[in-house]
Length: 335
Image 1 (tube, rainbow, N blue to C red):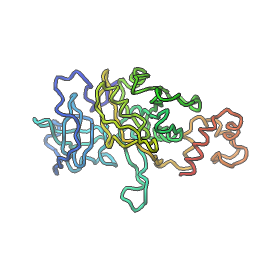
Image 2: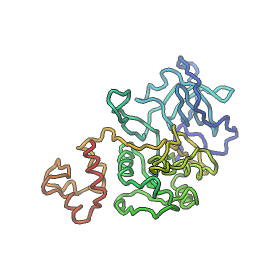
Image 3: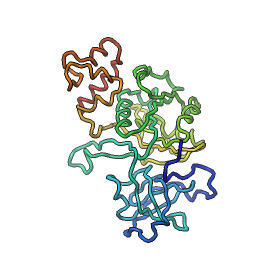
Image 4: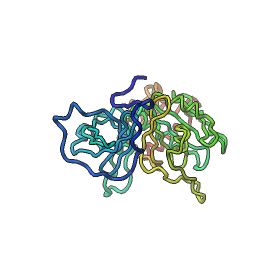
């Protein structure tokens, strides 16, 4: 797979890493570079801070200030995975002056009371992603198919190829995923503790820009550490009283992996609002409905209570998985 513009080599660089990503704030600068434009270097955002960012360039992390006006080509603030142009200095830092347009994005809708700043608006978690690894656990926290279904919709919305990863297979029997047999989505079973399935997962990620997403506590950071071969991310056990995950990862972080490619560990999300997916278009995000939707009696059939609905008939006959259809109805009700 060819390298995208702005991606530094994952390994083999003669320049040693300057520093690992940090969450401290370096402030920002006000001027937009003009005469020095030819001196700007292509890099990729590895971590975003309050008014600064860390970029990955030539295999090293560079802590950068952000110039006012650097976001003129994007609708949202900078996120991990953004391709940027920056002017490096001789101290392992620099200034970001340009943010390129995004090719893909992983988004959710900010939920909460409408009077809260940002509620009901698109929240981009990562950009320019090739593949999203949707991580769920066999247990602790409880497996929830509906969350996988929501992530699948958002992957399609953002133009990202999904992978379903069932982690913690050392703790319990993996759930039945037969409902996804009609979808062209790879499924891998893993255990971050024993190493089961890690090589299979790595093979799906090498040479690609991938993001780990899923419920808090499912083991995204543990899988990241396994793939990197070191304790790059802090991990915590799920809460004892309710078995729910803790938000160990608070910001998205980018890491290069051996063999080429990058992975992003994202914070766990317990709620996943759908962005700009209305009742008329939601059915298009369930590809297994396919030609059956065209066979419905009514052209605008929503596959709920309409008579002569080919999709509901296929569900009743067992041709379509009922679990996926029920997920569709739940999302429709939330719309």
